[in-house]
Image (cartoon, rainbow, N blue to C red):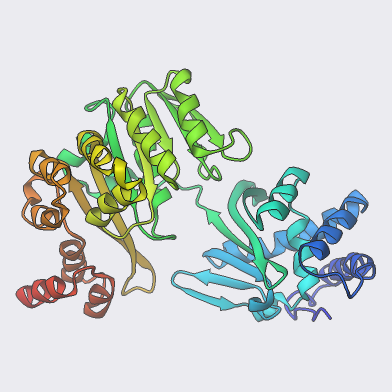
Length: 423
C-alpha cells in the first residue's frame, strides 16, 4: 500500500492529487494477475496504460513531476526508484551521497513500474522489452525553464528500476577549466582543423559537461558546422556562430557508428560522438578524423594511458598494430577527469591532460605506453598534467583533503611523494 508523504498531505490540493494517483494505481493493479511475472507483467502494465484516459495519465505524470521538482530543489544530480533494491522509496544523489527521501512517500513495485512506463513512447517500450534496458531523454517545465533529464530504465529482479540524471542547462564557462594555451589551441577549430580529442572518466565524472563547454567555446568563436551524436542528447546548443545539429541515438539515428558515417555526407567541421562504446565506433571515429575532421568523444577510463590501452585492446589482435599506428596519428588530446568531494561539501574537478607530441606519438606506435605517464609528469610547459599533480594543486589550494587526494589518485605512491614534497 502507498503511504502518504506527510509533506504532501499538508494541503487539500496535494491530498486530492494523491487520492487521484491511488485511484489510477488501483485501476491497473486490480487487473494484474498474481501469476504474471517478469517482462510479461511489465508488458501488461504498459498495455493497460494505453487504455487510460489522457487525464489519468496526466495524473501519473504530475506525481513524477513532483519527484523531479524535489530533485531540482535539493540540487540532486540523480533520482532512483523502483525495483527490489529501492525498498519502496525514492532516492536522491545530492553531491556525493545517495539516500532515500522518506517525505516523498513509499510505493509498491508495480506502482513504480506504472510511473516509469507512463513516460515511454510505444517505440521506447518495444526497445525496453527487447533489450531489458532503455536509455531515453525526458523534459518538463519548471518555473518557466525547460528542464531535461537522461533516463535509464532497466529490470531489477523482474521489476522495473529507473535512474534519471538531471541535465544541467548551465554550460560551464570554458575559461574556468584553466587549460594551458597549448591545450586551448588543440581544442579550438580556429587553430587546429582536425584531430581526435577524448574526454574520459567514470560515469558521473562530468565528461558531458566538459564536452558541452568545449563545443560552446567553438560555437562562440568559429564559423563552422557541428554534428552532435548522443544517447540521449543532453545539452541542446543554440547555433551562434556554428550551425549545430543534434542527433539522438534511437530517435534520429540507429547507432553512434551509423551517425558518424552519415555525418560525413552532412558537411561537418566538428563531429561529437557521445561515446565510443564498441570497436566499430572506435575505428570509425579514427577513420573520420583521418579524413580531415575534428572529432570529440568520450570513454569510461580513468587515465590517459588506460585510454590508449583500452582503445587498442578493444580491437581484434590482428588489427591492433594498425589501430595503434592510426591512433598515434590522429589523437591530439586526452582529458581524463574525476569529481572529487571538496572541503565545502560539494565536488571539484581534478583532471589529467595528455598532449600528443612527437615523443608520445612514438610511444604509442612502439607499444611503449608505460613511458607516457612520465612524459606527462615532466611536460607541464606543454600543458600536460597528471591526475596526481592536479590533486596536489587542489590540496595546496585547500579545496580537498589529503585523504581525498589519496583516494582519487591513480598512482598512490606518486601521490604520497607529491604530498610529502609539498608539506
